[in-house]
Length: 369
Image (tube, rainbow, N blue to C red):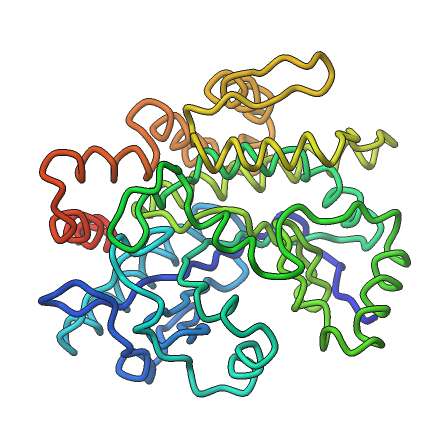
């Protein structure tokens, strides 16, 4: 398998899946064709599986600040273009009241093939995530860092949780997106790969068996992306506020730097049992930043807030070296003022008005001009 893990290290790319909304009803609108056309000066606007979803993607940026500025410009670009078409753009892990039965599939062979292959599982995947790509410079190093990221996935899910409603009802979960997307094959916690050759061999087994066309059909929380030369972190809900997206990106790239340096020093990634990490994924999706996650070393549970504070302390020197200390501090806002899930719950509980909730999401999606 050809790869491009050749550096530079720690470049940052961000992808966000966004909702296309009818301006009056604020329901999802199957209107991707009205949004596509002219591309922005930097980054890209792309379709996704459903016509009511669009994806914005930054170019590979040298740092988080550049990626954040480009992302804000992309949000403004699509928001302005949508408004000219009688549409609005929103960012959240789920649409609070839309129904998957009303959505149309994009006219594209890849996506139609997914429906044919996965049926209902693909049709009901009406969820919205954010992905962070971090540039890597060595294939073996990439595999070991990807392994090292696995225990941190629940913490990322807890911090980013932003989908407490589904089909017009509170679900009792901070991230409804996580269990909904879990219905897909080849999702969730990735396997631990022993080496680059092990990754290649295991992908080739699936390709040769006709199960997948290539590695991009592995939708794990963390995956090597050989074509782009990155590690891609896919575990998080789309964030309503762009500053929360950049805060999480700063956390991810600082964590990748920490784990890369440990790998270079010959340290083995922490091997936490699969069942512990998977249980923590569930606890994080259920309770968000109010969760207590299991520490396999002592069997005790630790609050997400406490674990995040300890991790931030460890990452600050790395964030400073990468020039993203300011963005990393945005994680403190998630902890103090609440993540997306807590903010959505607060707005909804005031009047139990779904239209008011989506209006609030739209208002905070486009950066202030």
